[in-house]
Length: 220
Image (cartoon, rainbow, N blue to C red; front, side):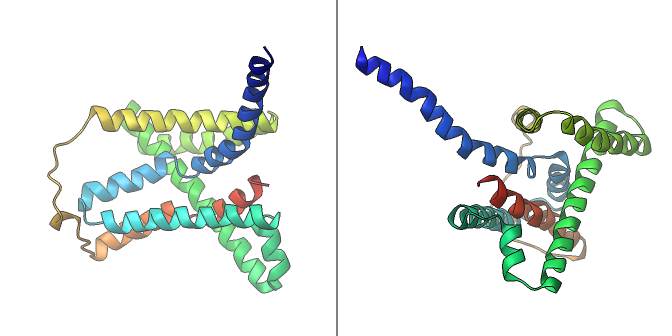
């Protein structure tokens, strides 16, 4: 009886210890699971095939490394990345880093709006201008609605939305699989003037400076 009681008491504690490690991962994943980034990836694949696969993998590995380092720094020092930059750098450098983070968030919101607008246009055959207006309206109203909730419920809402988008994307990939022959020669990077724009879009969709500050903060 005592052993069973001990096991019952350990289960909530295990879940309680697991959630602080899982929740930051899910919150950070929201920055990577959005239609805008998938639009960039699908557009690059549709136009250039497998020419950009290797650079895309390198960008993803670099993003994983940067996210790991930002979380590690936050755990070891007990400070978030913004506070560390404030303590270590001079004013000019801090202003530059702040502008960089702001531009990163603006571009992220822009890709989300364009991705949602593209999806509305494809699903409901609404003209692109109206789709952009509806997506921009959603981008404004969703944060307002989330601000009315407490922090825990707002985080859960964002994670459920990201999970729904991820599930929809995976289902679409599994249902409609094109027959494409993958060869080693087809995976070699072939850069051109047009593919350079797609490559920069993939870079911006993978490495987001503002996510590093967020990750180092929520692991505290």
